[in-house]
Length: 143
Image 1: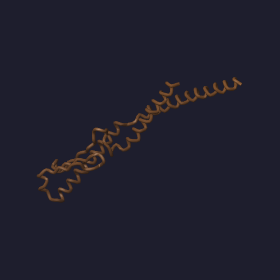
Image 2: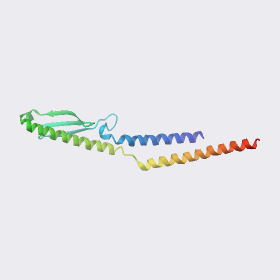
Image 3: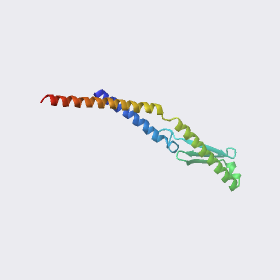
Image 4: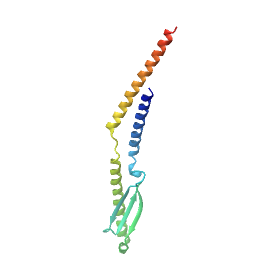
């Protein structure tokens, strides 16, 4: 019975981990793809003279302006900054989506785990019920 209890505990632990990964998957665009690697998007405008980097969470991390771009009017430079920033955010969303897709949950495997837990639970409950019935029979027979 101890082995059966350990099996049930192991299956429950695996199912919990899978469910946790499903819950966390919805926030992939707002956090790093994994603990050590941050997702970043890069966008350019004005033939590469304006470059913007967007980091996880949709925040701008870096803006680089080539000195040649400073010759543009303020209005033109502003337009190029907006274009590069939007391109960087689009790139970030695309990369975050790819990272999230790589962490997709196998629902068929999850269903198998849940079915295994149900079967193991029924088996253990049958054993417990039989133990109670045996104990009751001993008490009744002992009188």
